[in-house]
Image (cartoon, rainbow, N blue to C red):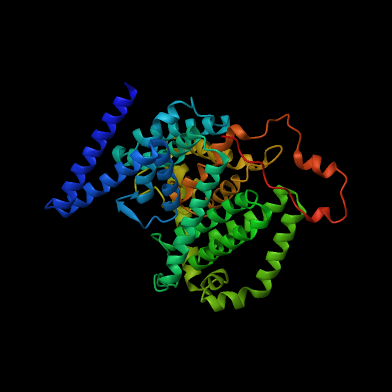
Amino acid sequence: MNALKGSLASFVGFAVLIALLAIGVGGNSLILGVAAIVIALGLTVLIAVGPDNMGIGFMVLGMLMAPMNALGLAGNIDVSDVFFVLGFGLLIPRMLTRGRPRLPPLYVIGIGILFTGGMISSLLAAQVTSSLVGFLKIILATMVLVFVLNLLRPSGKLLDTLVWAYVIGQMISTAYGIVRHGHTTAQGRNVGLTTQPNFLGLGGQIAFALLIFLFYRVKPQNRWIVLGAMAVVGYSVVASGSRASLLCCALVILAWPIVERSAMAWYWLLSGAAVAVVSANSILGALGQTNLLNRLSGNTSAQFSDQARTDLLHQGLDLFWKHPIQGNGWSKDTLLAFHNAYLEVAVGGGVLTLVGFVLVIAAIVRPLFQQGTPNRLAYAGLSYAAFGLIGPTLYDRIVWAALSLILVSYEHTVPEDTPDPLAARRARPRTPGSELRGPTASPPLRA
């Protein structure tokens, strides 16, 4: 009986495929034909690999496309959004079997306060509909992606694949910017496959932080691949001319040996710093990327940008003090306007919403400093937490596609009573030269 049902399902599936292909090949409408062929190919893959594998494939594609927000469809909908939605839809049966999300209490409390405060401020705003739409974008980014990926609970190998997908997406955007050398702003700042140079720099700084996680996930003999990828995404930050992203990369580099407490991390930091100091001018000059150095030294473009940010900061503070409790709503006039993510949340939702947002950010940074082995994905959280002080981004997939991965492995974090493996290693007798070996690779995460 089951074999008969399976044969019938296969027959119906192939009949639908043939019908769609016939429409695609013989239809008079080009759009209808292309759509039919795409659907037919999608159904073919679905039948071949199954909904789970296809859903995971869409998730990986969504992560790959996340740093390339210039590839949009309409309005604020990116190609990555389409892949994420398709992946979520196919993985719903799998996620329903996983129970409820396992998220840290700090994040749950923070997102609850953020949602409550944001909804209240929207309902009290002068433009209710516009405010609700603006706030919905923030919730979709900070809550939906996090909840879905936490429910999915990918294995260590799949988690590595998702992180690599994001990094490769940033590298593709960087390569496009190199090939299309003329694809720059009037100030010579590269855009890559993003809508503006600051997004290229933001994707670069997030990818750079994620590569520290991957540094400990690959075999030691393959770490040169990660270091090469660091050079590429680091170049994207330089090419973008974003001083904010460059400073965030510097912060993450400085935090690396402090968090890891290892001689190897200090070795890479000091070696990289020495190379950068000695060869920065010649390397950037050979690459034609003197723009960032000029902006750091305070050229006309940088001075204009600094003055504009100062003026916006004063405007935001004045607007905040008009309604410090209920906020001013999340319309286009207040959302992403003040080059400071924390100030934008305070202006939009008031003090209560700001508290919730700060707790959410704390929840994605705290795993980096947990007892035992740190959750190295949280280097990306630290990078964004710093960027929020000088950048306006609140809900772009460039940020939250990566940050949502931090809390995926919450159930894998080390319990409070687990001995610190780093301390245990330091207590063991060492052979001469062992202090230069650095930490071993992190153990793979369980499924």
